[in-house]
Image (cartoon, rainbow, N blue to C red; front, top):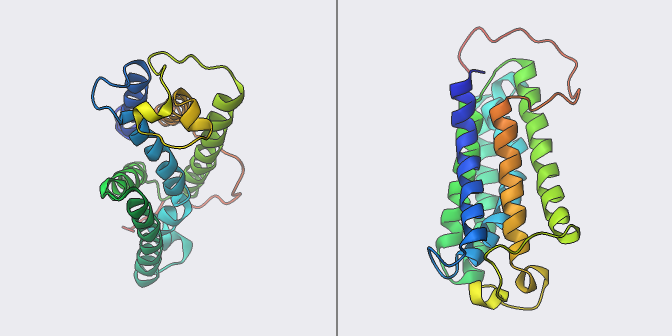
Length: 214
C-alpha cells in the first residue's frame, strides 16, 4: 500500500486524535460541552468498532461465498440494529447529534475499509487483524487512563462544567476519557499509517489475487 493511500486511510483517525488533544488542552475554546460530546463519541466508537466484522463481510462478501443479496441483507440487518441503538442514545440525550456522530464514525470505518480494500486472502486477514487491534487499543486506552496517572492539562474542573452529569469515574475526572480518546485514535492512526496492521495467523490460505471485480 503506497504512502499516499496509507496517509488517506490514517487521516480520519489522526484528525480525531487532534480534536481530542485540542480539547484536552483547551476544553472550552470551541464549545462549553465539547468534553461531554467527545466522551459520547468515545462511547459510540465502541459500538461502531463492534461493526467491523460485519462491514468486512459486506465488502469482502463475494470472496467469502456470499452473493449480493446476502451481503445486502447483512448490511441492512446490521445497519438497522446499530441505527436502533444509536436512536436510543439520541433519545437518552433528547437530541439528534448522537445519530450524526454514529453516522460519521460508521462512515469513516466504511471509507477506510473501501480505500484499503485488498481482495487477496492476506488483505482480508490484515483487516481482521486491524479490527482485533482496534478493540485492543480501545480497552488498553480506557484502562490505562484509569490506572496510570494522566495530566489534567486544561481540564481542571468538575465534569458538570463540561456537560457530564452524575457521579462516576469519567464525570469526576473528565480529563481521563479525553486522554483515552487521544491515545486510542493516535494508536489507530499510527497503525494505519505504518501499514503494518500485523498478521496474527488468522488464515493459512494463500488465495491468488482476484481476477474480476467484486
